[in-house]
Amino acid sequence: MVSIDTTKTVDRHPPYQTRNWSPTENCATTTVEKDYPWYANIVNYLAADVESDNFTDYNKKRFLREIRQYYWDEPYLYKHCSNGVYRRCITAIEVPDILSHCHSSSYGGHFATFKTVSKVLQAVFWWPTMFQDAQKFISQCDPC
Ligand SMILES: [Zn+2]
Image 1: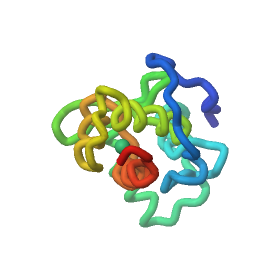
Image 2 (image 1 turned 180 degrees about the vertical axis):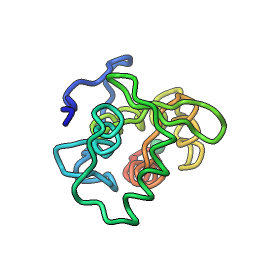
Image 3 (image 1 turned 180 degrees about the horizontal axis):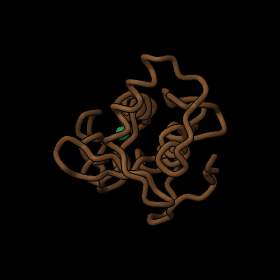
Image 4 (image 1 turned 60 degrees about the vertical axis):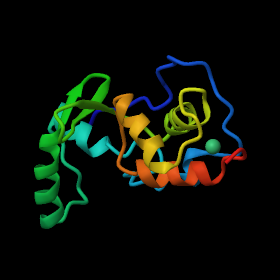
């Protein structure tokens, strides 16, 4: 089993204020477990050929179909999106900073959910609950 260090984040931007917004409380997560990122099963399969024990037949079939969209380039997982762009998969820890940058900064411009998610996608990031997380983040934005 491959261990993924979720404490490391790429700090390309200065930190932004994220008022009362925590990824563990507010993200609509699809995590495997609380301590692992949502893509732990995917990385374990791609990097070490280890399958989860919790798969039913249908879930395993679905998992093997969906895993073709992912590319593991250590230490990052990328998703090959339908428009041909590879987007880096993001952990829940990184979500608030990305949403803050894409919504609250001068680059973000406090736009609504769809435009904010479009900016996240333009920044070549991806996670499965980005619309729900952006909607929650924007609903808690004081200037909006
Ligand atoms: Zn706002």
